[in-house]
Each structure stands twice: as C-alpha cells, then as structure tokens.
View (cartoon, one colour):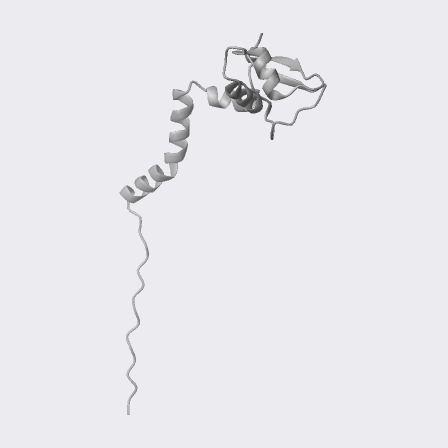
Length: 115
C-alpha cells in the first residue's frame, strides 16, 4: 500500500499596497490629529492649565479659624449664593478629599466668591 500525502498549503505573504500604507498611516496619526485640533480649538487653554496651574488672579485665600466649617466659610464669603455651590467650588479648587479642614489652614477661594 502506498501512503497518501496531502499537498502542502501554499503560504502567501501579506502585501501592503501604497493605498494600504496611506490608510494605515492615517489611522495611526488620527489620535494625534484629534488632540492637536482640540488644543487649537480651545486656544491652548487645556495645555496651559496642565503646565501652569491656575492663573494667579483666579482666586483669593482665606485662613480657617477654630470652629470654621466649609459651610460657614461659604456663607461668610458668598451670602447670596447657594452654599452647596460655594463649598463644591472650594473643594474642587483646593483638591480636598472631603469636608475636613483644620484651624490655620489656608484655603483658596474662587474669584467669583472672593470678598
């Protein structure tokens, strides 16, 4: 008896045409183009805040006294505003983890609520 052998499959190489290379390059460059467009549209403001932090004139500071809470400070600095909004702005500006503050601590107050 003779053994029957299967013919070996012919392996073809993947070939990129010029059109395929252009498409691959365009897809790879798309995230960078989107980021650049966002920076141009926003006037570079997003990049400036990452590098420079908040502008110097965008907030005032207040020193926490004994017995002060964020709520009482919010009511003192912005009596006509909703204290919840003021507390939220102070927490975000100072990157606080919660509502815990201590006497002697210096807090940045957003310019819109600054006295």
